[in-house]
Length: 120
Image (cartoon, rainbow, N blue to C red; front, side):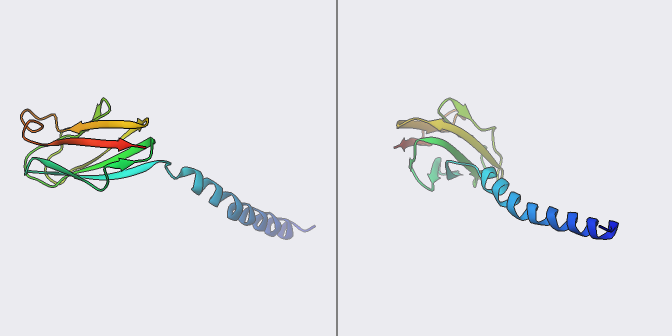
């Protein structure tokens, strides 16, 4: 076989392999679990895209929509203190049950910035 033919054959084989391998890698790189969008508001409340999730890995994507600083705590983990417009991701593993969440800024939870997520 000529060198140019071998190179072309090798290139074709690599392209074919990439077409098969890339989808396999792409599907395995997707995070499994549930994503919940959380908005922190200056009315001292959170709005969640859902309050019922499937037990397992849950990622909370928290965005501070207010002017005051807020954080989000659930299942023993919490985000950093978020300023206006900042977003943070918080991933926790939830077993079946109820999990309280809150803002840990002094006075915020007491004023209503708290709730419960149910994992089923």
